[in-house]
Length: 188
Image (cartoon, rainbow, N blue to C red):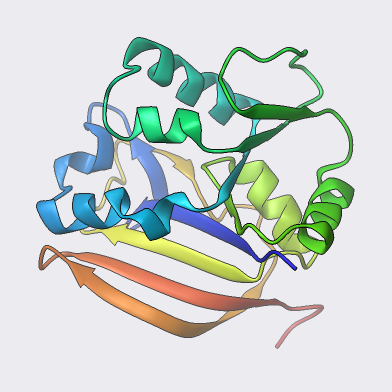
């Protein structure tokens, strides 16, 4: 059975990005980039929604030989969308127009390759609410982007407790935190 990990990079105040800031808030370091480039980080199927697909496939088309995008193009990807139409142009990408909860439940049951989300805040929230997320991982970048931050990650999430199962510091400043989530049915 395949496991599902929700995987985010975030600012300390919980944003996925910020206006005017470069990717990774300009704070990616050699240790973090080497970890991202490692084999273990490439042996999964990426799950995403239409907005993330449009963004990432556009980057991949603009920078086909760029490290990171070439590998991501080669990886299996599944896009959940009611607005996109097949065939999709980004290689190794399957389109699912139906219910993502049913599709991911079936993928977990049938598959052995790990599943991991790529961005896709709404998809992640939906899968977490459905109880399908086995691991929840964030890499926290030491910036607060209160004035320029966009895409607050945890808005509209259910209440969730998180049991820490792994942590690591990259480049003396980036914090990886990996948890097993439990969605709460009511107040704790």
